[in-house]
Length: 402
Image 1 (cartoon, rainbow, N blue to C red):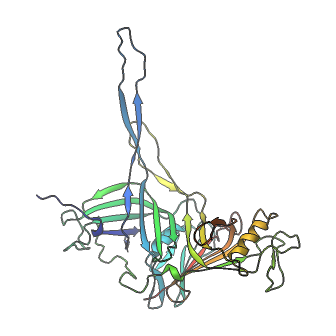
Image 2: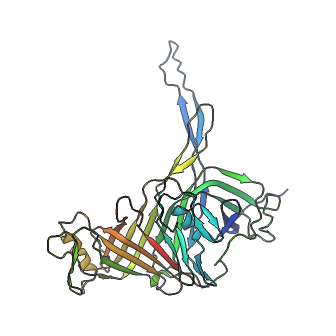
Image 3: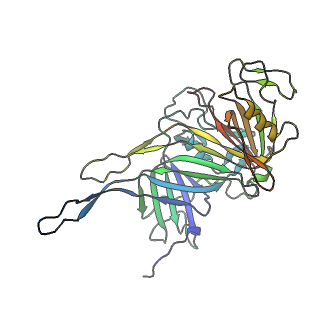
């Protein structure tokens, strides 16, 4: 029988939450998945005997399977179906921010750490869908399965009967979690989210469930892509600190954050982006036992600190309350060991077909000059909860299109 070679461009990726909720994920070229092993090498190391001989052998053990790793990129695609706002990447955001259950279009968590709502994703009919870090202070995240179906879109392939016998090579990864999501602002590109995470065990399957009815809302649309060039940024200092005072509205400097009666920052800064990145991190650790005479597999995960931040670049502009003013004010605020700004990124223009990322409490580092043909500034920021034990780092608001 002739050998069957699989091509990356003929691959379909599916995500399964619970017993029968499947999503079709339209990943871009460059996806990857793998699972390595942890090994132990034992070697002899002795001096020579009287005849000049010395044992130099070694042996090796496989101790455990390392956590499986996966990564892929998807376009951000807010979608409106009738009066319901959603997104192609909705399920991944839900898993990232702590949801573990999906039913009848709604996300939830079996056991909430707090009584507030929503859990990860909520909808306001005819208005928007929000993705929030509320209720993400959890020790473990929701787990799902990933399926990589090589040959899934070749001629004659049928999502109802994917199997090795029908020409597909199917890999399944269990107990998957989302560790990172990164949005890069390539000024001439389409808004893309880079996703990565871990799983417990990677295996090859001979067949898989019927996925012809997998959720694919928005995949057929050609109008729900977003252009990075129409991204805007709002930079406003806030009254995060006790005693911080907002003074005369409209004054060039009108916010005091260190209670010394002198204003530290302008009411707002006008910054026009040339690029940037927003990173979302769960800092997950997978746990694997280590027993003798056994190759152990990862048993599960625990979360680390939630970390949201990134950077943005803009031209150096000293006309009014713009980037040069932001640099000068931050560099001059020597009495502030902490500062507080609200950053709002609006991707897609702010009307139908947009994503707004609101980070109400950000610590901003002093911008760094980039010496190029046109002088630029690169500014690093860190989104923080309003308190150390809080969970209000960021909210994403999706407004969809058909």
